[in-house]
Image (tube, rainbow, N blue to C red; front, top):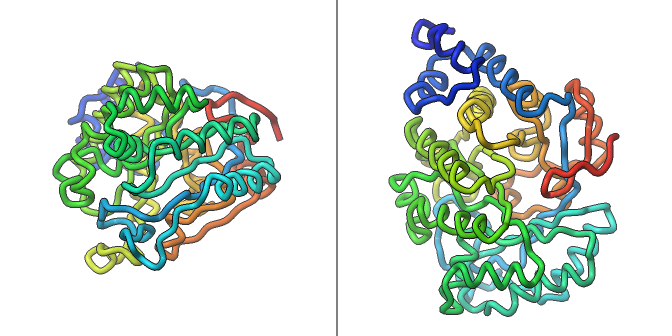
Length: 361
């Protein structure tokens, strides 16, 4: 540790005591990379002592790319009326689910744009038809901002929308749309989505109704270290309140084909990613799992992250279109993920959306 990251801070981590925001900043900025990784790995072993790394077989299709929110980091969306815009029928979405099931998927992460022309009944049908036709699949559908759009279009409170989704068969929410939970940054990246509380309030209500969800963070754009720490503080605080988050998933921003491409020509490098993975494990003492991303960071960086506090390797993502729209494409297979996890020195374990173990490879 550097002089700023004194021995007492290291002792505090080993004792299992909660870090303050100032201590988190000190670790992020001043700890040596390898010592930070060693600290995070010790905490990972405390949360998940089994030397296994989990993954889920999943796919991430989209039901629409039409969106009115105009986020400056997004290359995927199209404005209403665009010749490239689309809305899939329920049967077309079910065909995508079917193809994922044929490849062994147990989770489908379905997302789209904020499209005011889509009624709530459409979303409910996506959930209920997935449950009816593919009972082995968890419909891990719709980000917080999509749920907010459903509420706005239907004129119902967010809680009522979530209850109807739950009645249709949904029990988990993905954590997308968090970006950075700093009002300062959200005003610049996605002003139409509202501040941090807009995202937090949906997950708070979902947890209250019995949903489990993931938490995410997209970094490497306009934020500074204080914004990152504020994000982690928000996640830790809501988890103290609800215990509804299963995992935390940070990834680096890809600027290709977005309005931020020229201002931010280079996204966060692997060293920055590893620091954030390690800090996430140290700071989020109440979140059971930290996910490394082979997809957004590359398989080699993902392997290293498994030694920096992460215990999960995400999913197979048989279909993915949002990152692809930025010209950033990584693909894999179940066999490839198993090999990559083994080569990193861990035992691969297939899991469900809720981290229940299905199969050891």
